[in-house]
Image (cartoon, rainbow over all chains, first blue to last red; front, top):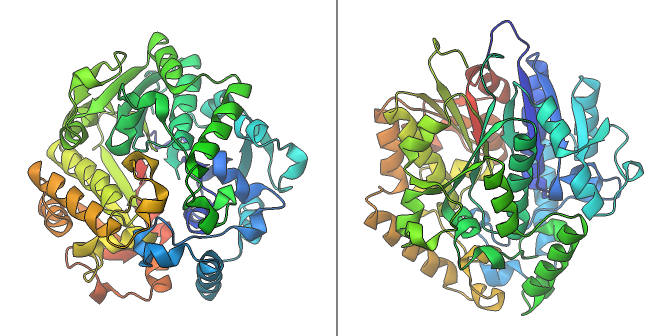
Length: 156
Length: 156
Length: 156
């Protein structure tokens, strides 16, 4: 990276679970506060993070995540996903991190750029109108290549 | 990144599920069409993407993925993985994206380089003969370091 | 990347499962052996890799991972996670890769830097005393931005 050039971060968000939504937003926010140019590209399940009817209801499941330490037979019971989600939301709030919608708005207000992935949107039958208004535009993969030129790329 | 130098993308594919196979191929394809040098390194579960007897049968499971919106108790029923897989394959075909084997062949034909990870192959008792013929060679992690010098690295 | 400058790798480890713990350590080790500066940042579930009471007991689950080829109804049975974990540990040992603790110590001894993520530690109520002694220090996201300047960033 040339010192003379503006440092740039391109974050690809491909997961729609609550625990994997935060790392991208935390990194984007820290980068913006450090004067780094930030581009967030939402693809596949990551589209949930910017889809109006889903972004306020992201979940976390103990299923298939041995780090959550819940026995598999227990983790499939109804209510376990809701319980884990509610616990994580409380922990996030305690740390003064905002919910997804507010956090993304903060990122936009700080100059961060949000993009939806065209291919994923077509697959999930979403249009720009289904997305969070903070989303700047919908991009194809080749346009992402252009925008991420010279950037540090993080795929989450 | 120096403007004078060829832009390079190194994609590490570590997942063997259908939904996480496509992002790497879509990015590789877009990069090649943009004139970017592309290296794909298949490791751990990602080896499934280039293993002859598995690459045509990648699956997707609703289990442990809250974005798919299926209750856990339902998602463990026999047939659910097959159903989700078949649905996703149809959606991918509708978007005119080819199946995994054809997509990788397109990438190779466009000049992309595919490599198997030696350590993972040893662990799974695979030899070069078990792999898709488009795979250029088998690399150790240190050789990957050499090849990825100056590249944007994406770990999927 | 300027040829004149030291090549640098920043690895963000966000997963606490055994299969996703190794890729970061293998890459870090290969990078160090290639003379590359290495920074490992442990966040979210990745904190398990450096938490004293957890790092020797990382698990792998066949649940939600179609690559492991176990039917969902079977994979939730008690004992399946333990069985898969024990099998993978044997395979790793056969390849002469050390267990997590020893591997991280090797990385530290070779000059690699390990950091805990402050936000995740607060969320999980961990202090520096709960961490593996090889961890250099606890970092906020903005400090990570500083350290990763000019680095190739890998998010696992």
